[in-house]
Length: 386
Image (cartoon, rainbow, N blue to C red; front, side, top):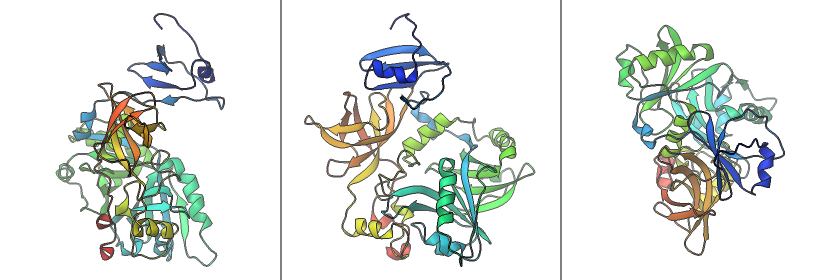
């Protein structure tokens, strides 16, 4: 506290408190919270250690960025191509949506689940004339490739290619017609096109990846910066960083791997009913998910939560004076006004949007609805099932 300077090894935090977390501030300083004590510190480079860890908050950002134009380049997306005459049947049997209904040029969201119906990843599928392309989080590219490879049998006419290191994925928030004004071919809703931007071959997907207006561009990794410069000059706003993208994602309620999409939760709990077909037949995890729907077995749902201040991800949330367990916080980011904005799985029997909650340290919050979520059978993927 005050002017005292301390250099603390990461695992040394255990000597201060059983719970410590770090909240970034502008420039290269940050706040270190240890129990009831707060330290203002300067960043120092350090190597990670298995002897301890701290939850690290992202930079403070104003929540109104969700409504602004912007361009975000993801340099490490996951991208797998599936080819061969059995490609459609193969993916159809490995994911929740009706892949067989896709026509060339169309896109679709689908979820990969394990044998107990727990979520592995949310995929955007692009149906080409001779292949299926999968866009997803780059964090699990190798493991997802290995999973697919494990399910290829000797007589299957299927080939998979992990091309994650070849592309960047550029999310653009803004009116797609602005791109058409630049004489660029643009896709219809639910579709993608292969075209050129500034003499560079790209794939343009309708949709920003969130419920916000926009589109997504796939470009070769070494061409990404050129495309970003073109887009910002065309009026799509400034380039945004990963923190700003994460804030938009949280406000929209899109779940991601490692936080909301884990083996602790299933697609229905994650608000991904729109990615599930209940009439397509068997796929890995289908029996469990069908039972959840039939017997109304979803016990928790993903919601947004606005907190009076940031709380470490993974913390439990409680409701009422009797500290009834309400759920668990999966994502949280510090807003410019000092509040915490996050996502949390909330137990159905405790409540939903509007529920007042608090963390173990007393921080208060209110559960919010999120635009990305679908929660009912009427919102499921397959029109036949409705």
